[in-house]
Amino acid sequence: MGFLEKSSLYDIRSSFRDSIRRVIKRGFLVLVYCSGYLGVLPQGQTEALVSREILGGLSTGKSIVLEGTLKQRERLRRWIQQINLVPIGEETLSAIDSSNHQVLVRHSVDRLIVAGATLAPLSFNLTNGVGVDVEILFDCRIPDSGSHIVEGTDGRWIEFTAVENLFHELSHARHKATGNWRSFDSEGQAIEDENIFRQQMASMKGIAPVALRGSTEGEQIWFPDSIDLAMANQ
Ligand SMILES: [Zn+2]
Image 1 (tube, rainbow, N blue to C red):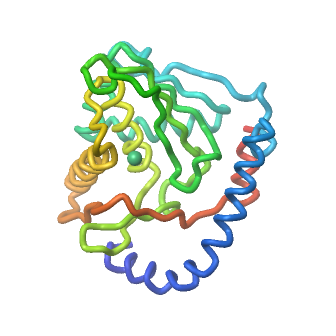
Image 2: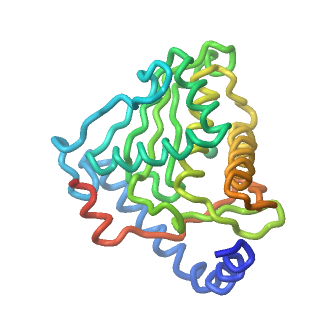
């Protein structure tokens, strides 16, 4: 589907979506906060099925660790392999790999609204070139595309795919792990990288020009169904 068709489709759906989104989000947030507060594993996920693996294929192969069930780790691995094919994606993964810090990518349903979040302890090492260990929370249930949209430079919604979403978080992780995090404009820093990623991926596919992200605004447009919920145990 082309960008223009997609945008107009979003426009048609937007009024209906706006009316139900707030209600759904509110309910979802309550559920998320309740499960977090009670300390229970989300969606019936059993602890025994969750394990960690070191992501192979990088220069040292020890810096990126994936945590989740077998299926969740498979998806993360596939997305990261796609990211690694794009020049700035490869550069980002290599920078993490040679940072001497670990980036843990962990499946979490708590981050569905934005799909991902990157956490690191607040320290001078974030900005002085030393860097810190980083944890990315990412919802591995999201489909490859159609889960999120973000605001483009012309104000229209543009697609925010799973790969772009995970790359965005890896960009935060890179800057935190290498200690060149832009504390006053963390989102701007990741969005700049994200737009380079979009342009490089588009030119690799022979698609140009490509719509770029213009702001931090974004929306979740996908909700898990029973199949996605069942994936929590695989
Ligand atoms: Zn971000």
